[in-house]
Each structure stands twice: as structure tokens, then as C-alpha cells.
Length: 430
Image 1 (spheres, rainbow, N blue to C red):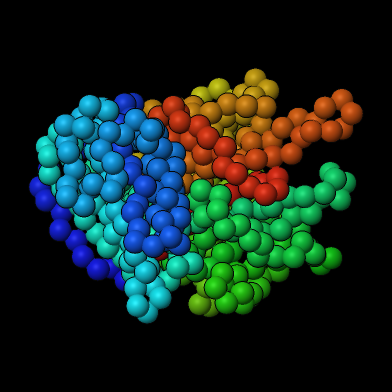
Image 2 (image 1 turned 180 degrees about the horizontal axis):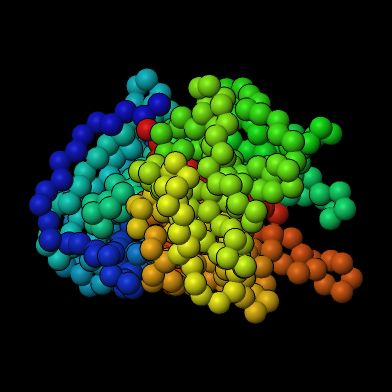
């Protein structure tokens, strides 16, 4: 679909250090991409707008209003007049072009400039079918993000979530998928059955989720591209939150058997179930560490709902959360350095993070009710869903998706066509 054409980055000093707790957004000028013909001119503006929205949404960049630009875009072919860009306070500048090739594909190219160093930092070109222009824009934003921060971006990723509609007593819940910025939304299930807890496979091609029918809960696996569905198992009692292992060979989940919930793993090759916890308490919401060697889960075995970590074999269980309130839905960061969680305290809900040893707890957001954090693949942002209370007449209510960076300073709603809950962020495309 996409053809990578050229790259010639030069050495540069411009850098954004995002390892510090709080980062001042970098002023960046993103010029609407030029074009040779009328149709591509609109695409050029759209590509620049998506790149602008992606970078601004990260909280690390402050795009400059194009009305402040001094140098006209059509003169950039001769090179940037750096003094003009310094005059509008730009530290970095991006411009590019869109041209239609004889075979009908688009050639989209861009250049990233260090305004104060007066040198090119990156230059790439892509060939793609016209309908893929938005994905190319996300890839360009990822390239800029990585060149300036030194870390992988997350813009060329997708979100699967539960789309909710209808009155509370007849709520319809369908699986839906969209780009990480809310574009290209489509439904994956019809709404005939209640669906819960969708999670991506490591390749981002499959989704595991729970579906409830007359016979009870079943764990499904869905191939996103082909639409092929497979029932991994039907389990008696309650079933909770299936999630893939990092190597994709197993699914971990919580099953309620004999009236008690414990953590189990299922080998996807043999379909054999293995019990990992055996305790009279409720053990649920398991999540692997990125190396697959450990599992975090929540349990009330200590008298209240807290977060625990154990070896992937089920041994060496240790409690890591000791703050006030109750903790739930722990999810290990793809970077391995943090565990995200939902916290309930004093009638409020919080999304927070702590290190895998339980130290360094920080709360990032707070509301009437919010839960279900999921990590961006670079481990720098979280998405979750926030529910709203109904008014005295039974109106209002509903739930929406939000994302927050790990500093807690950048909180934004993610647009969806319906009420939405239980998001899962995809890995980076292979």
C-alpha cells in the first residue's frame, strides 16, 4: 500500500527531551503542502492539517498559526528563509508537496528543518493510493515525532472500543474500530450480542473479546481484515477480560469457577487452560509485562481491592499498591516502566500510574467515573473511558473516550460517533 522512497536526514542539534516530567511544547511551523494541480492542492492542505493535529495532540508541539507565516509557501522550493521563520518563533519547520504520478498514485514528500541550526533534519517521500492519504499523514507525523524526540511515535495506530447506543434498558453494544485520532470509524459487530473488553493481538491483526449470548459468555477472536471469527472457548460461570500474551501464543483471562474468580491462561495452539492463581479472593484483570515474564492483576485477597504482581507461571505473588482507596484494571506499559490503573477513593474515580514495584504513584485524571486505561504503543499516553451521571429526569449520562499523557498535563476527548467505552490501543503496525 505504501512505498517508502527516500531518506536523507542530516545531523542536527534540535531535540525535545521528553524524559523530563514536564515538557514545554516546541513551536513548530507546518506549512500546507504544495501541489501541482487543483485536486492535489486539497490533499496537501488535508495532509498538513492531520500532521498538525497529531503533533499538537501529543502535547509536545505547539503549531504556529499559518496566518503568522512570513515566507509564502510557493517560495519554499528555493529553500526556507530561516530569519523569517525565527521571526515567528518557530524552532522547527515542515513543508512538503503532493503530486499525482502517471500510474494514479500520489507522491507525498516532506522536509523537516531546524530553523535555528539552518539545516534539514529529515526528508522522506511516500507513494500511495489516493485513499490512503490520511495514513501517510500519520506516518509523516510519526517521522517528525521520532526525529525530534528520539522516541517512536504512535499516530499510525488504531483504537478498538465498545460503541454504545440506545436507552439504558436496551443498550446496544457493538465493537468498533477507528484511527487513534477518531477518523475512519466502522463497526465490527452487529449489536446482536453484548460485547465487552476488546483487546488487540501483538500483530494488530486480531482482536479478542467477550460476547454474551443466551448460553453465556464466550471468548472470541476476530481477524480485522478478513472478518473471520473464531470461538476460543465457552466457559461456565463468569469470564473476564481476555488479553493476548506478548508473543501472541496465549490468552490470559479471569474465570469464575466454583463461585470464585482466578487467573488462567489459554494456550492458543493446544487450547489447554492453565490455572495461575488459586485463592479464595477475587483475582481478575490480568495483564502481562512486555517481556511476558510477569503478570499484574487486581485482587481483594488483602481485604480490599489492590494491585498485585506475580511471575508468569503463577508464583511469587506480591502486592504493590498500598495507597488509600481501591485499585483496579492494572495494565503494564509497553515500555515496562509503569503500570496504569483505575483508582476509586472518596466517591471519585482516577486514572493513575505507578512503577512495577508500587513506588511513584501518580494520579493523572479524575472524574465522577472513569476506568479502563490502555497504553499507546510508545508508553507516553493513556486512553480510557469516562462515564457521566444521568440527570434527575434520567437524561444525560453516557460515556466518552479520553486520552491523557503520563504527565497528566494534556487531557483530550477522543471523538466517537456514539457513546464509547473500554478502548484498546493497537500496537504499531508491523
